[in-house]
Image (cartoon, rainbow, N blue to C red; front, side):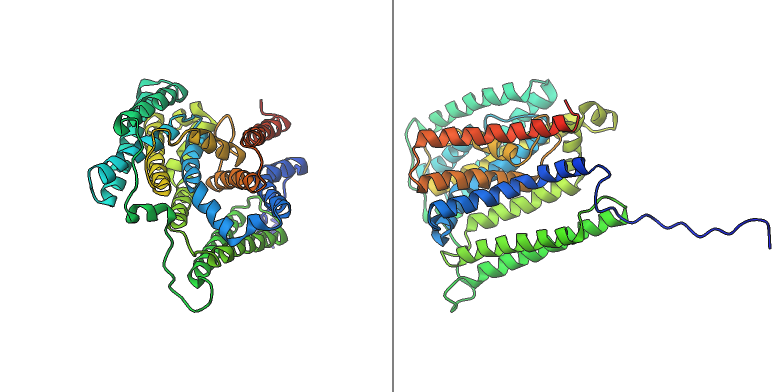
Length: 407
């Protein structure tokens, strides 16, 4: 035998199921999961206070129809906030795109889809206009979009000549108020809605398993297996319960399909695409992003083009639900979208936030508003409560940063 000593081959370390710092891990889990816990608590609270009325099939369907446009805006606003910007003009863009659609469809007798396409085109142009001033001229987004809020509201008055236009044809109103016709009949409920929900649950579970396997492969921190399974079971239970209520009401809303497509698309974009990673890099550390080769100007430009597009989608949905266009449409919508993003976990300083968090934040605001309406709470008090919820959500974000040593 030679003088050298044989050594056993080294094995890759197993994936960790915790963090070296338990307090840090707890803080991170609280930040990521706190909004979901809060949402469940609020839903159960209003279910008790309203004797179950808030969870009735009809009311759940109404929540989906009533707050879908806020959720669409929240997706775009989340991306804007993650990049370190803000957009105060989306409410006015909703009003202007709805007004242009109404003028074409109601005022000039064009087909309903012509109004939809025109609204989307105008939204893209508005986004490019604002993106140019922010990205290439260097004016802060707060100032550009504040000017846009005034500019586009004035254009809305001009397009509508200070009067409301209604009604839209039935095909247009189905965008926000229509339902998918029953496909599997004879059950006393819409089985197709349950089928779609079950498919969504399986797709979500597969995505979560794939993400966990990838983290294990690269020895990253993962949650304990029992907690992982519990999370999947709870998500599946909530989604199927929600679908069951829809199936026992009027079925699957068309606007929910639109919203689901947008959520899935933008979740993938922000999580897996180069553009999404660049948005997080810009918001997290602008100097580092520039040094690493990110074309900050063009990324910022497309962020606002995207916001204009989603504001136009919200404009079509809102005008469809309202069955007309009004000069005052969209008032305070930007505040609802901003609140949804921040309540859903977006950081005030940028660089942090997820699409699903913004959706939960928007739904939380919607559930609170709907519950207070069912309880007959005065409108002024509703505004006070929503303001306090937003303040507490941002305070929670700041508190977490200070505990983590971030100033």
